[in-house]
Image 1 (tube, rainbow, N blue to C red):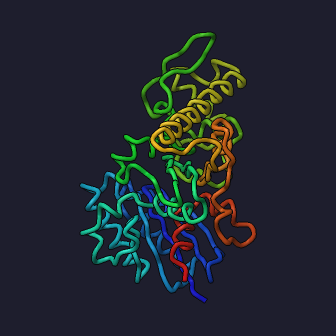
Image 2 (image 1 turned 30 degrees about the horizontal axis):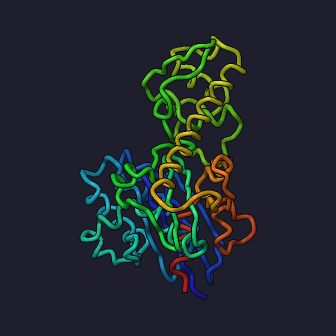
Image 3 (image 1 turned 90 degrees about the vertical axis):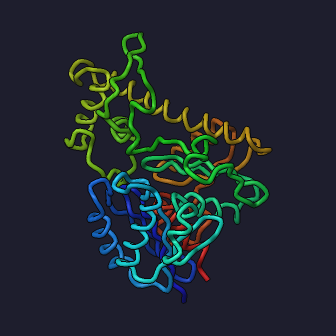
Length: 339
C-alpha cells in the first residue's frame, strides 16, 4: 500500500497530511513562524516527521518563501527546499502546472514553486468539478480560483498577478490585520476612523463573536497578552483609540460584527471580480477550504451558490474532515500523487 505525505510550508504554519492507499489517515498543523529564523520550522519538521511516520513519497509545497528573513523569494525557495531535504529526506517539490520537480531543480523552477499551494487544491477541485469557484480562507490570506471546463482557469499565477486579478486577497481568519480590513467602525452613530497600528487581529474579532474555530489560533496575540474574550476586547478598543471599559460588552460585540462583515464583503467583492473575468455565473458550486471554510458558506449564500466543503473530494478517515479542510493544500497533494 502506497503512503504519500503532503507538506505545506507556510510563513507561520507547517501543515501535513498522510494518505495510505489514497485514504487520508493523519492531518496536523504546527506553529513554525519564519520571521525570527528557520529554527522553529526545523523543529516543526522534525516533530511532524516523527508523528507522520515514514512514506513512500514526500511532496512539498510552500508559501513561506515570502518571509522577510529571505532576501528574495528565489532565495526562500532554495532555502526551504534545502531544509525540507535535510529534515524529511527524499522529497518532491510541487511546481504548479509543471507538476513535481526534484529538489536539485528547485532553484531553476523557483517561479513555478513559489506560493503554488493554492494550485494543488484547485487542480484537485478541477478533477472533481467541471465548473466551480474554489475559495480557501486561511489564517492570513484568501485564495479565489475559478474552475472552468474541468481546468484551473486562474488568470494569475504569481502573487502579483493573483492580487491584481482578485484571486488572492490578503485577509485571513486569524492573522489578518483588522486595520487592513477596514479603516473605520460605527460608534455612537458616527464612523470612527481606526488607528493604523497592528493593535488587533481577526482572531480577536472572532474570539469576541465566539466564531473562532478551535485549535487554529497558534500565534501570539498582537500585544503578547492572553487569548481571552476580555483581552480581545481591549485590543479591538485600542483600534478606536479607546479602552474596553469605555463601552459595554455589547458595543464591542457590535464593532466586532462590523469587522467580520468588512472581511466577508472584501472576499465576496473579490469573488465577484473573479467571476466577472470568466463565463462562469451563479449558481455554480463554491468549493470551500481553509480554517475559515465554514465562513465561506455565507459567501456562497450571498452569491446564490451551493456550498461544497473541500473534504468531500477526498477519501478521509473518520474525525479528520475538518482538519482536511483546514490543511487543504497538504491533503490535495496526497490525492494528486497517490498511485
